[in-house]
View (cartoon, rainbow, N blue to C red):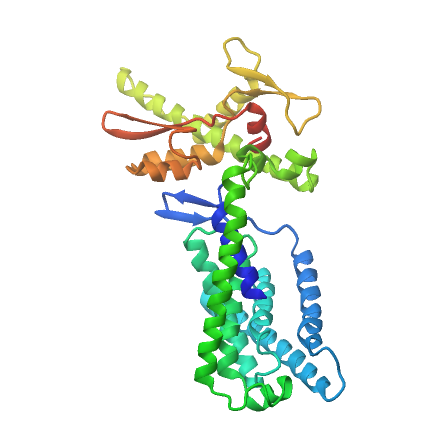
Length: 407
């Protein structure tokens, strides 16, 4: 069951592709960084995990389909091993996070508790207690390493479904052959099921079965998703504009969390304003240095605070309605009364990357295009003058999108 879901999730993630700005080029890091969005409510994550954990007892223990004729012993064994594997997975995750990564993550702990439940599911009724404990340890290591691996391969798996269900499901199928006991197998399935249990032979059977499930599921899901991607209008993903704005607003005319969105917009405005002030102060310093060289006398440089105050006053005194200003009249989606928006709003994230790329002298155009999150030849323009690479990027989207995204 789990390897089926994990395989389907992998095919879907590869077909749809990563979300906008999930993987971005960072010149300071010298590579692609993972900017995976964080969950907005860890309380809901905890509640959902506990509900799944409780339901697992009905899934594993209830597979006996009864409690008579000694089947209750099989059900108890399945539920006990499920608890043991999940608990050992949590302890292993705590150890890895504390002593390897250096910090704890509650979302990672809850995710890996499910990884332990997934891995023990195939052999919950046939594995010994020590086997269930080791299964939980191996599942924690697999979940952590698998999540990092798919992030490195730039596979956008929002909830780590491929890792938890796919990889840990395959791990559970393999470990069932290694940690199962013949006595427990006979008690769960009857003495006529396997007369002489051989770990090596059963391991081959388990791997062959897992590969068959992977091949069938990947082929079936590909036959469904690929025609939808290439032949349906719009494909399988919303437009870039709707994705950046948020599908809650683009498709349902309202934010799911308006308070959070308001705080986020205010924070972005503050950051953009600070960066604009810093940029103008830097330009003012450069111009003052150039004037000093041409002047006959020397003047004392102005203090940093006075320069910032002057630029701040200039920004406040500037009016978008002044003559010669490049302004487009448009309604801001966050303000019912509407405001006037510049044709090229200040994009703090993109301009910061642009400045970094120019300073570092990046020569790879693909890196520059990935940095601004736009494909070559569509929304970016690369200009080379005097042998120096410089990036001039202008997002060719409507001012409404810019107001939603960067305002």
